[in-house]
Image (tube, rainbow over all chains, first blue to last red; front, side, top):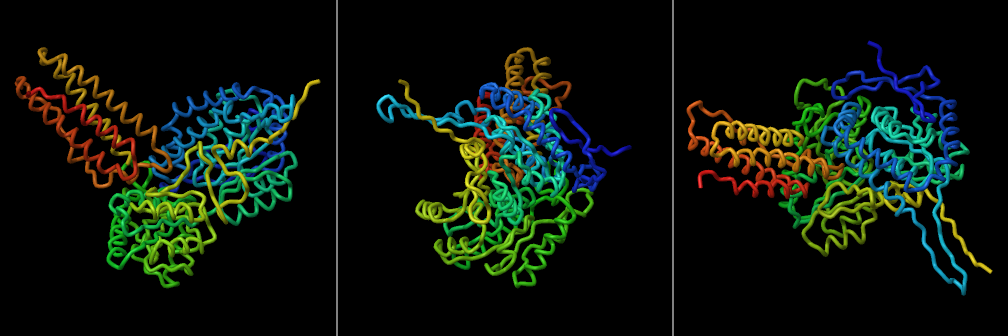
Amino acid sequence: MAVKRLQNYINGEWVDAQTDEYVEIINPARMELLCECPMSTKADLDAAVEGAVEAYSDWRNTPPVARARYLHRLIELMEDKFNELSVVQTREHGKTIDESRGETRRGIEMVEVASGIPTTMQGFNLEDIAHGIDEYAIYQPLGVFCCIAPFNFPFMVPLWFLPFAIATGNTFIVKPSPRTPMSQCELFDMLDEIGLPPGVVNMVHGGAEIANGLMEHPDIKGVTFVGSTPVGRHVYKKCGETGKRVIAQAGAKNFIVIMPDAEIDKAMVSLMSSFFGNTGQRCLSGANLLVVGDDKRYREVVDKFVSAAKAIRVGDGLDESVQMGPVQNVESKQRIIGMIEKGIEEGAKLTLDGRKLNLVGDVPEDCFLNPSVFENVTLDMTIAREEIFGPVASILRAGDLDEAIDMIHQIPYGNSAAIFTNNGKWARQFQHDVVAGNVGINVGIVAPMAFFPFGGMKDSFFGVLHGQGRDVVRFFTESKIVIQRWF
Amino acid sequence: MAAVMTFISKVEEDSAGFYERCAERFPELREEFLSWSKENRKFEKNIKRTYYGVITDTIESNFSFEGLDTQDYEFDTELPQDADSSVVKKKTEEIERKIKEFYLKAAELSEGLLADIPRVLRKIAKKREGRNLLA
């Protein structure tokens, strides 16, 4: 049977890419071929931009309340297809079915919040700035925006931007990750079904050529990106050169601080989810567990953490009893194994070795790893400083909270940081002092809801305004000030 | 984990089916059994609505029910041909007790990560307290 070849969605039509180059999309849990993804060309990209530019003038003049109604219809379709959408994510990415459901839910929440645009896009005014003269601010769309999406949340991440962009009156182009492009095809099927005018939303599959083309294209007003720090820095620089707005959400090395009074048994479920959820492949994952306390407390925390990590059931994410799926591809697994070897070389103690596989069911081993835990990790080690993006936890120690915060600040990233404690003073100090965009207090994964901006500081973020919430509405709009008087 | 939700569907469906069969066999308890059956299906919907409404990439449930063995809470819904109403009342009491214990345990285990799920599970366990044909 012929393998399905994915198409681009340009100007309201599903069309074949103008290329002969395709990459295979493999289910990492089963190593089965799912489909082929085109590596589109500049001609495909130009067609998408042209369609988006043409659609813009009518779309920006469509009343916000009418634009929002399209999103209401999209929400209904997403709810109807909730499980179907989740299964696609699990098959192309490997994450567990509940993780996919969580991703689908978060995606729906984005559309729900964006559909409030008649309220959130409102400007402000002041009557009588001088006698008989009024001043007001209005927010207007800018044109064509785009999203360069990552592989780890293939359905959700473009929804951090797309619904807000079109709700504010812009038109939009998504370039899905060429590793996990299928979820976006599902989304665009629904966008097609709700009957948006041609060109308002477009999707072009591809790799670096398309990404660079989006950053360079003179008709694109802004770029949203989620991915690694080196690429995020490149996107920021390139968009600066071409005068585009940019949100570049980048890599991370997140710390979780366990204070001596933390309720470790209650925290454990949150810690497992943080370190090993999504197989560690997310920018909000816990990476460094920083234990504050004496030797006895340290041992207690480490033993419980290792024991819980060891018990995690690893297998095909479609098996409902499984708690952790494979990493997304064979290359990722090899890279993660390389980091584990580096940790051993640099003197850390590998207390739990996830390279020794213990899998649920009869699955090929190619992309699987069990959780790994390192002890005796110090800040100078590669595994403490660099993003591993896999199921590997590093445990470090600090004498007190001040030292813990100081250690966090020695790492170039600042995506998220969390503290587990029952002490309000410590929690307040942590929240106040720590340089991280998303702060958790007794919460392991600090993922902001759709109505709050997704923070990120230092090398974890390049830009000014963040994704989601009020920030992203401002990002997709230009403020215009009007001062008026009548004679 | 998702398997727990599948188990919740099973216990509510199985017990609802059991009560419907009992309603046919024991006319004197028909009304009670039919209302319980209807309520069980509402409970299932309520839990699922809550579950699928709150799981996100933050509040996912993969690790939420760690240590919960659903086998401990399985029950059979067979009734002997010659069973009289005292047998069915006892059976009903056993089923309800198992389901209640299951919900309370699931609530306890999930409160470290989830917030709405343990709340709805406890609420439904409490509602079941009123079901007692032996009193």
